[in-house]
Length: 190
Image (tube, rainbow, N blue to C red):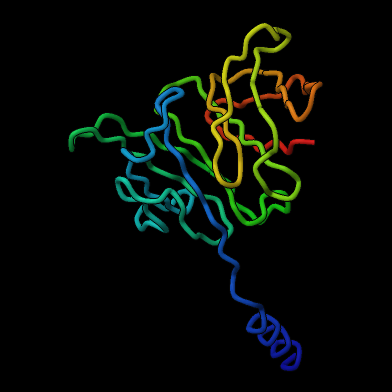
């Protein structure tokens, strides 16, 4: 019995330190990026007494956190006055293989919105031109991608959309891509 107890303790102590992941939280008001006007505080889900990470006004939206489930409070300010407060609850941040240690979440102060993050399988920003169209209506795009260092981002009303990817003379269409309400969906560009 003593040997098995010592073995369990030894295995527990031998576990490597928990890997930190990069959590990026961006704030929007509708389709407008207001991240630079927003304070963000991240807590372990259901434990709001002590912050795990924070982003100051005008600060970088990147923070390092261990894998876990989090609640985030976003406070949008203008001229030193609070405009809106929004909570995003139960954000799952795990070392998913297709995220390469970088997890993005979008908090929107306007009801009815969601976000679509697009990356390559190698965790890079997609090549070519990207446009989002209303499902089955390819007449005019409803949004063009916002390009960031590692990804392309669409922030639009939650719904199903068709994505056009132009890398050459003939565009590729990907239909029925769901942009969930109050969540950020990661979609790997084929």
